[in-house]
Image (cartoon, rainbow, N blue to C red; front, side, top):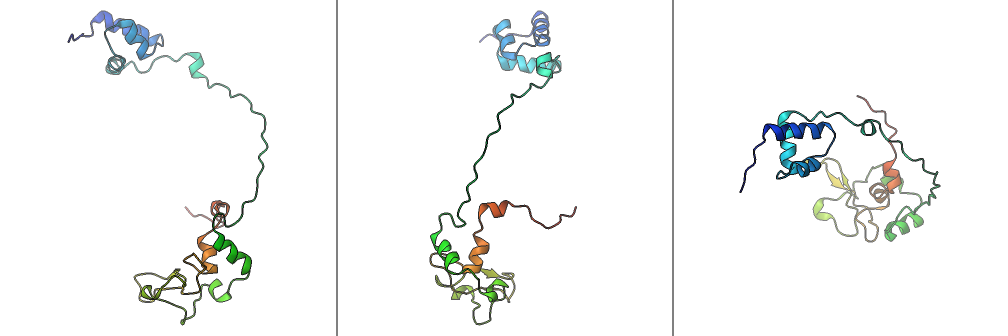
Length: 170
């Protein structure tokens, strides 16, 4: 294996090519028996990284104007892919005022051990608190929540992306 050192002549040639705006690959090909990475390393060690920019590279290029495209927006169903939820929304337009206000009657509240497929699994309160419970209302078929909690849990993507109306403080 032959190790080439950077002779003064090769370093001068490197500097000239670099200042002329040649790429590291072009310089490596011009010098011969040196890799692109070796050129990059030498340029870095010599502190040559601040080369003069060509006028074309210095000025940002203008973008081509694009014709205005008309986008057709189609309203998607609220319950894309979830027929159980769609059916619940269609059949029960007015939610139960008790669950709507997030006030769950004492007789409906369940512990984790009491939950089953027919009951609402919506957690209420702090799990580390002794007052913690689950909604326990009638769950929709195939879903873990009642009608009201399903409306909260399964929101359309467009509703989730809307900015909140709450003022932000910094």
